[in-house]
Length: 64
Image (cartoon, rainbow, N blue to C red; front, side):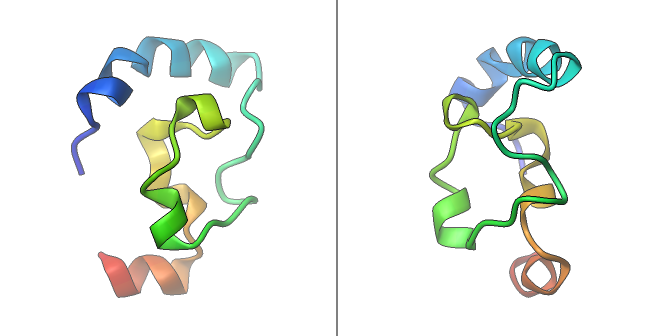
């Protein structure tokens, strides 16, 4: 989906953080329940540009 205005403003930061491996949670390694994931933001230590990578495949198929 489209990033929220909040996430869009932070996309540049996200790119920087990604380079520095500064995210607390790693895409494709740290999984979250959907209802929790939708509330998470950059400040929570996740990359908002690839939120689907924080969902396990089986869960992603259910919600997409």
